[in-house]
Picture (cartoon, rainbow, N blue to C red):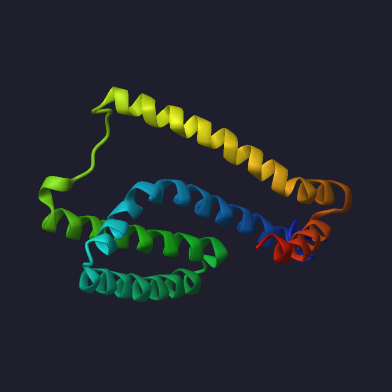
Length: 168
C-alpha cells in the first residue's frame, strides 16, 4: 500500500511519500526565507537593470539544471532535487543583492521602525483591509468550502471551475 495524495488519486510508495514530505518541507521553509531576498530581484526589475537580471537569471537557471542533475545522480532523489534548486536560487538572490548594493549603496533596506506613527496608520489600514478581504473571501468561496466538506476536493474543484466563468 502507498500514501495517497490529497489532490490527485496518485499512490506513492511509503519511501517516496516520505521523501516527498521532506521535499515539501524544504519548499515551505524556502518560501518563507526567500521573501526578503526577493526584494532585490524586484528592485532590479524596477530599476530596469535588465542586463543584470537576465544574466543572473540565466546563470541561476543553468546552475539549477546542473545542480539538480548532480544531486539526483548522487542519489539525492526528490529531496536532493529540492535542495539543489533551493541552494542555487539562494545563490542567485545573493547575486541580485550584490548587484543592487553595488549600484545603490545608499538604498540598502534594514530592519526597524523609523516612524511609529506611520506604522500605526499602516497597521490600522491593514487590519481594516484584512477584515474586508477575509469577509469577501468567505462570501465568495463559501460554496467551495461547503462542496469540499461534503463531497471532497474533487467536487470542490469541479464546483469552483464551473462557477468561475460567471464571476469574471
